[in-house]
Length: 354
Image (cartoon, rainbow, N blue to C red; front, side, top):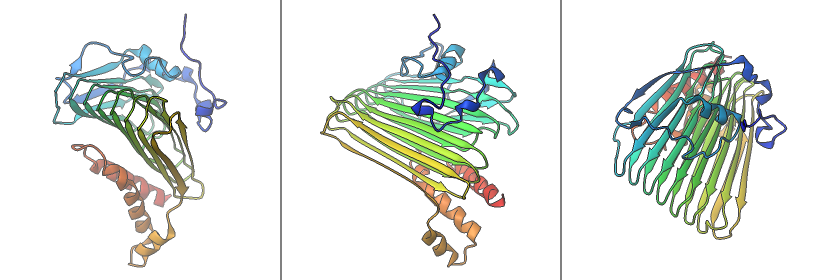
């Protein structure tokens, strides 16, 4: 019996603000990305481990990904510390294809790794990328992941990230979303044993007619767990962004701490951003907070720079670059942030020129 979930619609709350109604799966033929890896050879396993963090596909897209079998599995034995950053780059070169890369990271007790995964396509490539990330961090393991969306302006991305944290583990999930036409990421962390920690970060910048769409879950299933989320985005032109986040603290997760912050800058009258943080707490012995803002650049910041001779377009650029520093400064050691800063600067330049 086929148990693959049906295509979602905007009638569902979690897809309400999305552009899912524009998508026709029949327009895309399954294909493989051209994938390069650096530093992954000693960690790669031939064993397939789908389901180590996502037991059941969350929707039709995660189901399609699991059917593909295009999996890179990285296994870290107990105590293994990987000093150099592992890099994985998926190139989508063809038009009209459905690409379904899956990355599985299985980190043994007291191991450590940093992985940067990039998704790249040319501007005219109209394709669909459906990636899945699964992370299982054993006791005291430290896993850092950075996903970078550098897709062209005609490519769609609908991705899922799920991480499972055991006792005293540390999982850092970061998304840098600059490309794509419509780009959606569902990022979920589950802290399942005492003392597990998670940090979720995102930097996103949508311009022109782009849309970035985020759904996050911080799920605490054990006591004295901690999660922190910081998502910062900017929208210009007629672009849109959506953030919906949920902190869920189970009844047995006493003395847990969870923090959720989403900040958005609108850079023009046609730009639109939506931010919806949520809490679901089943015990009183916790520390939790959520905060969200949507607004334009504060005039006093712009005025301060312009009063010192900085041209208006340069002042706006400096304010936006500074706005993203909070995220970039928290990226894992060994991750080169200079290309990300340059990409943001290029988007700002293009925005001013419109």
